[in-house]
Length: 440
Image (cartoon, rainbow, N blue to C red; front, side, top):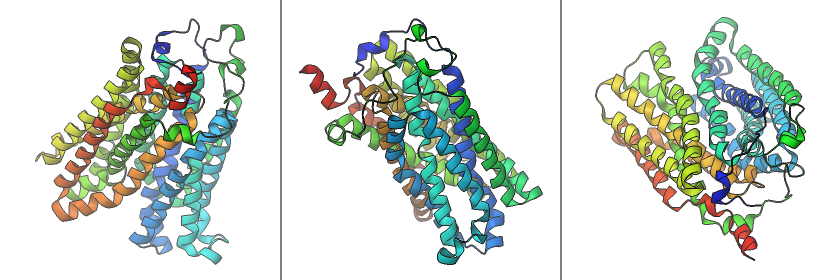
C-alpha cells in the first residue's frame, strides 16, 4: 500500500529495538565496500611496475569495476526486494570479498591464458563491481523494512555515511600495508574483513523486525507484511509513467558526476595543482570524506524532520535542493580561491553539502513505493554511476583545455542543475499506477 504524505506523521508507538543494530551493521558494510573499492587506487603504485601495466591499462581495470557496478544496480535492487536483505547482502559480501582476494592473484591465475594479465584483472574487477552493486539498493530495502517513514532519511544517511569512513581510512592504511607487507596483502586483509562481516550479518540480521529474536511480534509497529516483498517483477510501465522517477535518476546522475570528481581526482588535484607533497596531499584528501561522514546523516535527519512537519514532498525537496545548491556554491568558490587552505575547506564543505542531500534521494524511492524500494533505488543509483563513469574522463579533459578552475566550476554547475531538478520531484504522490489504482 502506498504511503501518502500524511503517513509520515504517524509515529510508531514502539519502534523495533534491533533497528539500530541493523543500521550499525549496514554502516560497517558500507565502510567495507569502499575499502574494497578504493584499495586498488593505492596498491596500483606497486601493481603497475610489478605487472608491467601502463596508465591506460590501469584505467581499463579501474573502469571495469564501475561498469559492473552500474550495470547490476537494478538487478541488485530487485534481488533485495525479492529475496530479502539478509541473504542478498550475505552472498554479496562473500562474492565481492572473494574477488577482492582474487585481485591479488589474477595476474598469475589460469585466467591469464585466455585473457592476458590486463584481461584477467578487468574480468575480476568487473565481477567485483557486479557483486558490490547489491549493497546500496539492498541497504535501502533494509531501511525501508526496519524504519518508519519519519526515520528513513536518517537511517539511509547513516548507512551511506560509511562511505566517508571507508574512503578516508583506506589510502593511509593500504599504503602502510603495501609498504610493509606488499600490495597483495592489502587485498587479502580486505577480503578477510568482508568475509568476517558476512558471517556477522547472517547471524545477527533479519529481513523484517517481526523475524528478529530481539523483538516481540505484538510490539512491532513498522510494516510486517508477509515476506520481504510482494512483487516478483519490476513494474517498468509504472516507472516509465511516473515523472518523479526519471527526475530522480537524472538529478542523482548529476550528484554522481560531482562525487566521482572527489573520488578520482581530488588527491591528484591537491598534489599537482595546489602543490602539496605526497603525504600532506593524502592527509588533506581525506577532508571531503570526513565532511561526508558528518553531513550525510545530518541531511537524512533534517529531511525526516521536515517531512514530519511539512509532508513528504516538501521535506524531501527542500533538503535535496538545498544540499545540491549549497554544494555548487562551495565548489565554485573553492575552485577560484587562490589560497590552498581556504580552497580545501570550501571544496570539502562542497562534498559535505553534496551528501547532505543523499538521504532525501534514497528515502524518496521508499516514499514512492515501499514494495519496490530496492529496485527503484537501484535504478536511481545506476544514474549516479553513469554520471560517475563520465566524470573521471571529462574532468581532466576540461582542465587540460581551460584549467582546473573551469573544470571544478563545471562540476559546480552540474550540481546546481541536479538541485534545480528537485522542483519536479514529488515523492508524496507515489508511483503513477498505484495512485490510479487507489483512485479506482
